[in-house]
Amino acid sequence: MMLNAFLLALREIRNNLMRAGLTTLGIVIGVGAVILMVTLGAGANSRVTSDIATMGNNLLVVFPGQRNGPPTAVTPFDMSIVDAIQRDIPGLAEVVPELAVNGVAVNGNHNHSTQIDGTNNSYLRSRNWAITYGRGFSPAEILAGKSVCILGETVRHDLFGDQIPIGERIRINKVTCEVIGLLEAKGTSSFGQDMDEVVLMPLKAVQRKLAGNTQVNVIRVSVAEAGEMHHASDAIERLMRERRHILPGQAEDFTVQDMQEITQIVQGVTGILTAFLSAVAAISLLVGGIGIMNIMLVSVTERTREIGIRLAIGARERDVLLQFLIEAVVMSASGGIVGILLGLAGSFAIARALSIPFIFQPGIVVIAVLFAAGVGVAFGYFPARRAARLDPIEALRHE
Amino acid sequence: MADAPLIELRRVAKVYGSGEAQVAALAGIDLSIHDGEFVAVMGPSGSGKSTCMNILGCLDAPTAGHYLFRGTDVSSLTRDQRALLRRHYLGFVFQGFNLLKRTTALENLELPLIYRGVARAERRRLSLDTLAKVGLTGRENHTAAELSGGQQQRVAIARALVASPSVVFADEPTGNLDTAKSHEIMQLLKTLNAEQKLTIVLVTHEEDVAAYASRQVRFRDGLIESDTATLQSQKVGRP
Image (cartoon, rainbow over all chains, first blue to last red; front, side):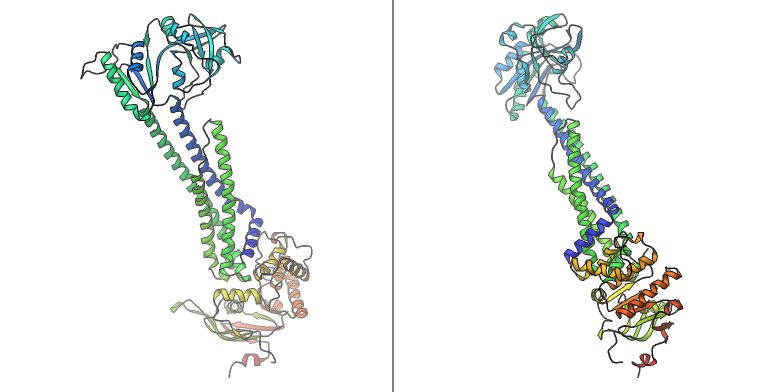
């Protein structure tokens, strides 16, 4: 009986490829769209999170002035504070001084306006940023503030095209500078910032030759243990208050910002994004489901007469139902499989194009297929049952 | 009569609706049909001939009375039991042909054999043989849409025959055909009756169609008005 029902079901599908194709297409679209949505959503989410991680692990950012306070004249930082932090506060992985100035880098007739960052090698370590060609700063270069520079990929490309300019000399503002290293390309961050738009020089070189002062704009502190962030932040605040002679109760003229907090905010935002995408996915699943439902209802109504013929010829209600059930299962299963393949292939391709990671989400695949197949089977089966319970005469009269 | 009738209706009645709206489509009829007979059931619309046909074809159950098929009372069978009876013993030809759409002649013929569980090779052989019998050799792989009305009705007749039923019920089989095709179809049925001893019960309201049958039964107002068979067949069951 099972075998015969299979035979009848497959014949019916083969003889009505258009109808079967439309039903299957509904399932393909439902399943594919959901998989696409959710996979891309997860990829985008993970991209944002990993971008935050590239800013540095467990990062505290210390800068002069109050973030939201009035713009008052404040004492800038200098290297003595950096040294004091490094010396007096335990549990810190890196303390990175930075002095950023705007400058124009010139090679022959190519010039490129960019940000010149005066710092040291800890800058690279704290960001896990590799040098692809050449080397980092030597201790002597740091100490003496020699005019050497490391170029970001965007700057290198603008000045030198396809060349690898190790040992070449460029001018930055009025300073002649030797290229000693090239940074690994990082691309655009999810915040739309070109991370390769940078030139690194020893801090002292920027201070003396470009800025003409001994200041430090910002100190980035990476804390060894994530759990020690608050502790480290408090210790830095105490140290700074003391060194800058801020009386108890008096407002600080500097800010210690915990990047973990920012990370949490951003993750909150991407969480909302994920929820939104899931809602879109749920809607597309629902729409796909309604599509399947429609075509099933229409085709069963159209097939009432066929059911009448089968009943008259000697099919029992259960013979008809088994056949319809098998048809629905075969179409749902094949639609589900094609939907999974298309959804995964599509999200793989789009993820590549958007350079976000492709993250396979088995849960949503299962949910999408179960839902689509459930809708397909339910709406193939129940109207068929109604028709199979009709008197054969009545079903035959159906136009 | 030497042998027991193939079909015997005893005081069969069919009432539709309930209460005030009750309509008696059949008011208690007696009818016997023997193996090898070719019976035309006639009557104006509303006379009860279609209701009688549906009961005979086990598509419907009577509200009262008894229907004996080869001596077995089948009037109180369940839906599924009636379906099995149809599957194994009855064949149907309809006015509207009722072939499966987008399905070849051969597959339409195989359908009742599949329900009967006939094996593949045997199914194919029987189907091809039967198609040849109704003169459709070479049309095995045509779908209904590719066949003329007459050819479609031949396929339908072949489908009714293919499982060697005890009786074939034909409900207005010429209703959708022109006169020439009607006569071809009736000639075919008559030949099948004569040569293969196929029992045929035919419903029609056309005299010249009914004339092909060897016996005519006329209905009026839910009762049998006349029967060209010998009068005793009407009176056997009535003391």
